[in-house]
Amino acid sequence: AQKLPTVLTRAEVARLFATVREPRFRTLFRLIYACGLRIGEAVTLEVQDLRVPERVHIREAKGNKERYVPLPRVMLEELRSFWKTHRHPRWLFPGVGRGWREQPAQVERLGRAVEPLGVGSVQHCLRLARVEAGLPAGTVVHTLRHSYATHLLEEGVSIRLISAYLGHASLETTLIYTHLTAVNEASAREAV
Image 1 (tube, rainbow, N blue to C red):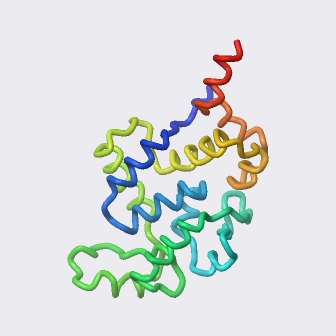
Image 2 (cartoon, rainbow, N blue to C red):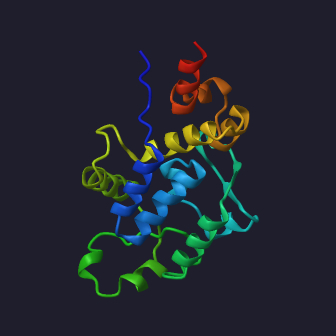
Image 3 (cartoon, rainbow, N blue to C red):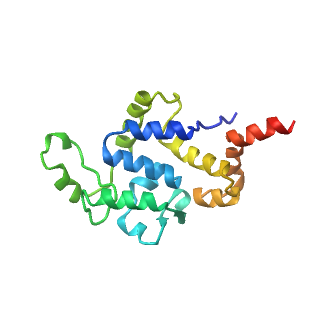
């Protein structure tokens, strides 16, 4: 049996963002939601991936595929502001490594990081924020991707376009979101 994924309302997404106080995590979560990215795609984004105007270049995604995803201008400005806090030459979200709290010069360490922010750190942050924001128990980082797709569908964006943005190999994979839209459900009730 295939379980339907958890999807947050727009109000719940906003509540999650308001709960996360650490700028690198808040910016990362906002990017994942704004572009429908997988966690691994988001943490490994490089500065050069934003050089295409208002699009993000996703390289070596699931299935070793590449794609371009639209990047809202507001998100681009937020990413630029965040990057200026560390100015890492490669990573948008550099990892600080273990023991960073004991190190006085965290910003300096970010600029010299040898790897991106760890997936485990991101997942841990979301677990804490989920509880504080009072979100459903099934809420994980990937829930932001599901919410992105569902909200686009509710706004009338073509299922084929959403499929391309998500990098799905099959349209069948994307069709799951038609079961999750509150707008479609309300329309179906009124049609009967």
